[in-house]
Image 1: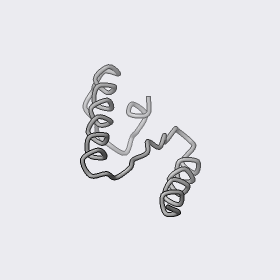
Image 2: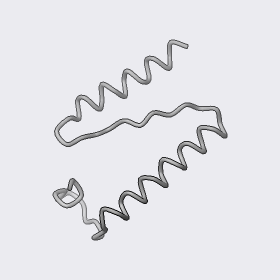
Image 3: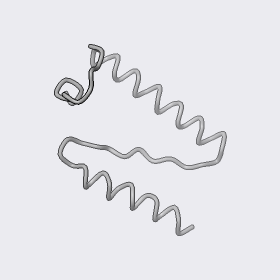
Image 4: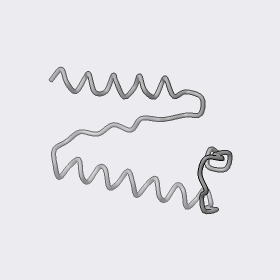
Length: 68
């Protein structure tokens, strides 16, 4: 939905199924990199209209990681 309403970019027309495949591949890649490097990762949801919530989640994640 967000891709269709984003007027700031020109995007290729792609099905929801293909978008999900791309997201799944991205998750697999980041998980693999995390395992290979020993670096943790977190998935932060960036829902429409909730940018402050996403930013707070990023800050919380970084601060928790810094305490160790």
